[in-house]
Image (tube, rainbow, N blue to C red; front, side, top):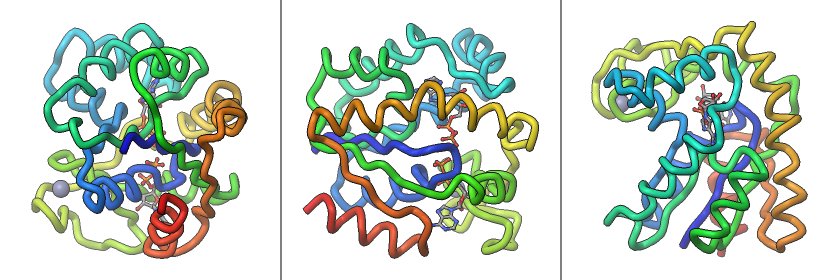
Length: 205
Ligand code: ADP
Ligand code: ADP
Ligand code: ZN
């Protein structure tokens, strides 16, 4: 099973992807997570990507497409994969279609006015990439691996506004793109985390 999770920043893609990938035993591929790992490891790719990420802009298609192409060829993708945060442009979607088939695209819908609060309260684990929210998780460390949580630089309010504009311009057109191709599954992301997971599982089965 090959899945794509679509939705604006803060919709809950990462949170749901972790659960769904576990449930179906497929690889969870977060392009944002991969880029953050490149930055942490101080690679040339990380240095290039950081300039874009810090502005809330998209990393160029040429960079991202190559990265995803080699990632989905790895052994752990044999059962399938879940792409979290890719594709984000029509060019990326076209490139993906050349490489592999997609079974379903899950679009997680959340009212725009909710997103800023979700993003600005997000705290991430540098070890496993889990996301928490300050309103529901008061501990400073990750429940799963004990690492100290941090706030992403691009989750600051100035950058968030730009990311939302970029989403509307570049990524939202993919909703129609996948609807036309008969792949789109829309779920209400404005509900409890468990409820959203249930809707996704129901929609996929
Ligand atoms: P995305 O990967 O789409 O940017 P995340 O999964 O990182 O989104 O979630 C963004 C923030 O919102 C995190 O702080 C997360 O804990 C929180 N969150 C995720 N899903 C929900 C939900 N259904 N209700 C409330 N908060 C949520
Ligand atoms: P979120 O879904 O919360 O906005 P991500 O972790 O998916 O955040 O992405 C963080 C940043 O990484 C994006 O704002 C962008 O700069 C870069 N990025 C991630 N995936 C892509 C992609 N498919 N194409 C271009 N840039 C990407
Ligand atoms: Zn962790």
